Image 1 (cartoon, rainbow, N blue to C red):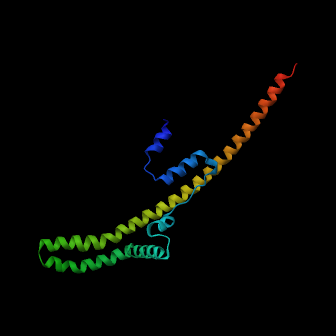
Image 2: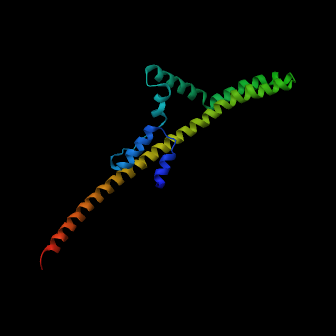
Image 3: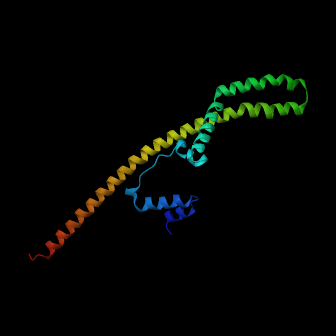
Length: 170
């Protein structure tokens, strides 16, 4: 078994991906690179129906609203307002609860979402750049395959000419 076959056999991808991979390897000139971004996969999460589109839209709207540094600042102010009351109790459980339930959950959630949004935007940008590169390389490879096919035809013609010349008596 070749190294390539072992690699394919170890993949944890779904059968549709393995089939598409096999087709691309069998006929590379026919493969068309696809651009996949977060918007492309949204219908797979909630579905492509009107309700699914609404759910995706609402989830993205809320995530974008909560996932801003301005929201983190507002939540920090809200959390700090209740800090004096928590400290006034001098009860360790109340203070730890304030830290865990109020500060960490209320303030860090928007900051984590901001970080995820930054990562998502950079991943989409990389996907677009990679797509452009792969599309260009694909076009170059298709052209190279065409040239190799033409060279094969020329070599075949030259071989036939040589065979004819070798059969001719001198």
